[in-house]
Image (cartoon, rainbow, N blue to C red; front, side):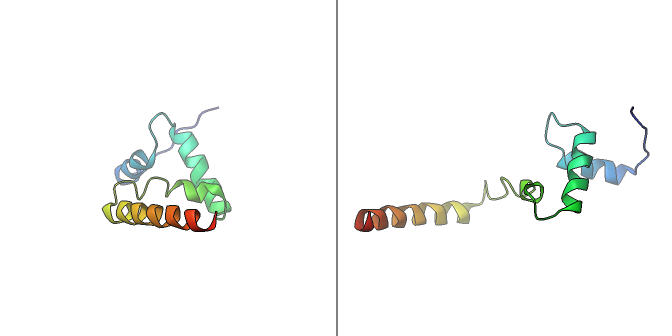
Length: 77
């Protein structure tokens, strides 16, 4: 059974921005409630997925570490 809720325009916009495409508001609210109940689960990690995607410093460090990892594996593998 569906229910109608009234929320402010500001809250609606925040929910809309945090909702992945193709996900309903019901699913989003359910996930937010679950993550609040148990913050040490994967639900909280989902919030940070892709955060570093466009971070240039992260990409630079990732490439640098990749090179070091390759040289380390050649020496010790």
